[in-house]
Length: 128
Image 1: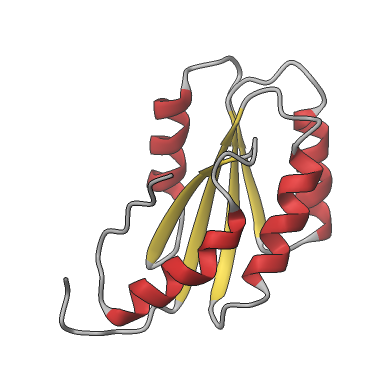
Image 2: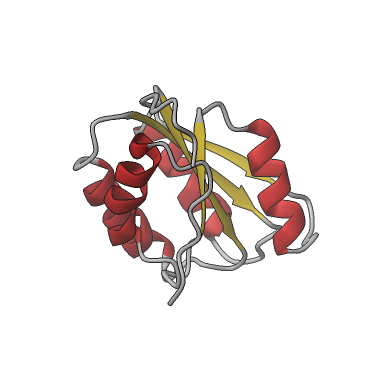
């Protein structure tokens, strides 16, 4: 645990996805709902890992509507790990939460993670 107890200024949510047109709107709605409950500036960085469905278009619409949303679109599928690493490399936050857009990582845990980060924890691993 980091004893400096410094409050983060900006939180990055890195979201890896591949062909998630059905879950993406539900995930985004749930994510925004949770981010409204935490007192921190945020960015959402979607990393589209070469989707062949309408994920590309959905993400671009979100980018146009919300200045907190950014996107990386891979030209083909490179794999989950490559997508997450790209997002981590390009995010601008003081802290990063990595999630998948298929809702297997529940956005409802974000307030708890932010609270723990603000207590000084450097690494938080959520386990089902």
